Image 1: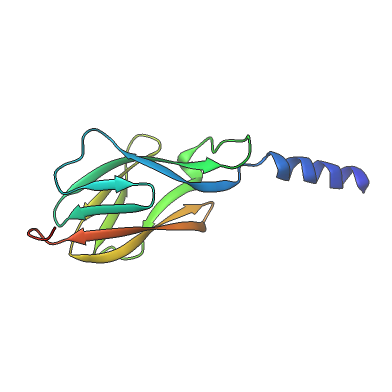
Image 2: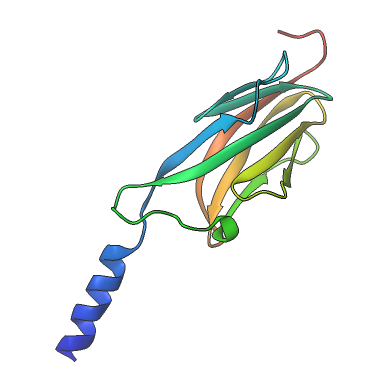
Length: 123
């Protein structure tokens, strides 16, 4: 029994531990698109291509994007689509408003990134 407990502690201690989501724009963002680790902004009708990866507070990294999903809480405001390349997503501004995009790891919500979509003339 003691051996099982030691193995369990070793396995848990080696797993990555979520410590935030690092994100950047893939290429120069269009005018009207802003991408930061804690907030996304874009105008209606614009598309943002992002590269994002969870940070770990342990030495173990998140190795595969298969366990990571970005999910809009309101697809009517912003839609999130998977990109064909690992760790990349596409954000589409659909209507003016504020929502958030959840960072989910293995199905669990870790964080929600505020997302603001502005109408064409708004600043």
